[in-house]
Length: 530
Image (cartoon, rainbow, N blue to C red; front, side, top):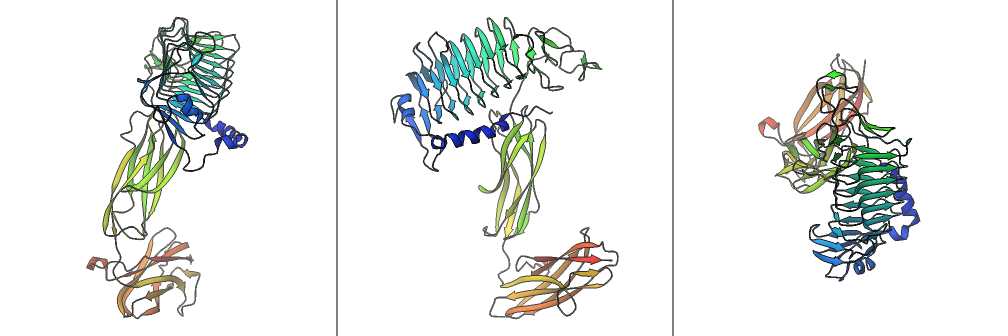
């Protein structure tokens, strides 16, 4: 399923500009941000905000706080429980006014504003890149008011029994998703606003209108449920066009007053068989229409999953590289960005960022675990975890254990390999060998023991197509210090020409006889010519 990508990436320039302009406001010294508790550290929320610095979190414990708050710093304002952490405006002004960028507000009930315009549960003015989520906003003149603002996210809020559920004025490129607007006089009003995304919301039981657009254009409205509103949607004046669906087969919105049948399917609704999409568009005024209205209420959700984790080996020697193959998928409705982290036991191996993975898509990743320094002769569990995306409901499939791997120690010998080098019969370096000739390879062995040691030295070569050219080996007593051995390996006449590779290993004995490696293998490349 292909879904329109989010606009947030277009705000990267904005974040940079804001950082440059307000560097003093946004600069947070690592480790300096703090959590301020209300009422433990300060009795009122406003006092806590006044004493906070950018990057701080003001954590408000359960209780009723009769305040009218101004957030003029880039902080997080977090309630302990949205049902029992209540900010009451006492019928005066707005409950919370936000005038700074990068503000996060979550976990509150906001109620009882003054009755005049523009008093709001949350009033956002000239503010960018904020997040306002998981709040109950009820019994206000305006539930959420946003003016001259962009790049903000409003998600997971319950906005009930206000005069206006949400009023968006002269604002652009904001995302309003997964909210519930219930029994407001007017659900959501857009005035002189453009390029906002309104998706996955429920707008129900509004006395006047569900959603209203005045002098607003290029807004995207899809996957919403418009249920039993006096007027479901309205656009004024004519000539202002918005997008009311995500194309076929993703569809548009559910409209409770839509009465057309669902007999046909396809982008033109002219193919035999129903598809859950109405056969005729839902008209919203003269210039606007939902081309693909849903017959049933739309269920939308965020969900990313780790589908598979496989390993390149089940046993490796300490110091070798284990490759970890991870497949992640976006099984939700939204385009998502998230991180994927590989672990051995609880230790992080590596993390990668997945950007803009579209709905229904999969992506394969490869992680490399360098086991150098890892405790040997142990079994480790290897896993991969996808970070939680905003609004994700099912996190049980974000972590998958791919299997176990045993990291083994090398033999307790001091024999090591310094290098393997293609050479001529006298040991001088050579760059290439002809197919059908004999290739010679110089192996430099380093015995750090004060005594002689017995070792099995093997040389194994592969041509450009990774076909084996053969193996040559010898078992010998290696004297203390550096020893050099030259081994000849016939190059088959039918070998593929091009870049070939040679590997040298040192073992205590043949592995089938119980031998183990003395050290990591070494390798080199050479050319095979006709």
